[in-house]
Image (cartoon, rainbow, N blue to C red; front, side, top):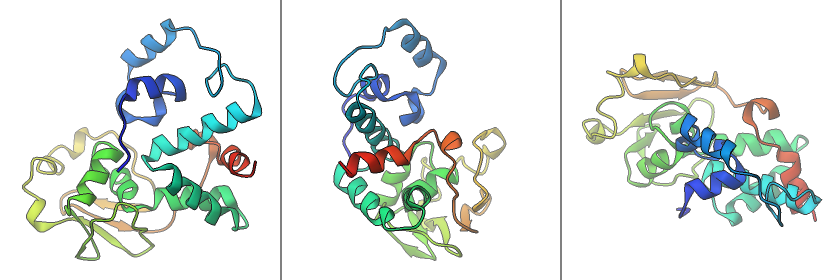
Length: 205
């Protein structure tokens, strides 16, 4: 699991969107009061290397994966006819990311822990591998023995308060605590806020 020592410091460098908990008004006000710092890899670094490194790190921390994992995903996606679409699909269709997108956890980190601790099943089989890739037709669910856990007990009751937009490729039933994978995610750089083409530039150096 990727260990993160200071989300605040990382988000100051890479942008609030990399962590759910830094997407707040408090963080935005703090960011506005702090002048951008110059330097290699920082926001003030206008070099190609700095721009590529920054974007690579943004993707890595957004999905909470290691450098090696991202490099492997990028290498596999680069062989596809649409590398950016392929990379986005691989990242979004990880078991932890899909569980997060479906609203089964408040953050990707929480979703990753839920999978790692065996709280999630895929097609009725318990999985402890956050990187497991789901596919169309799969059924993701909270394990029967975990449904009374404080982690999930309020999901059905609080569904009306959940303002998160569920992507169209997932069909969620919070009453049954199940998610059906109806299709595959599509990549839009504006909507995701991530520029995968720049990531490929970094790995192609």
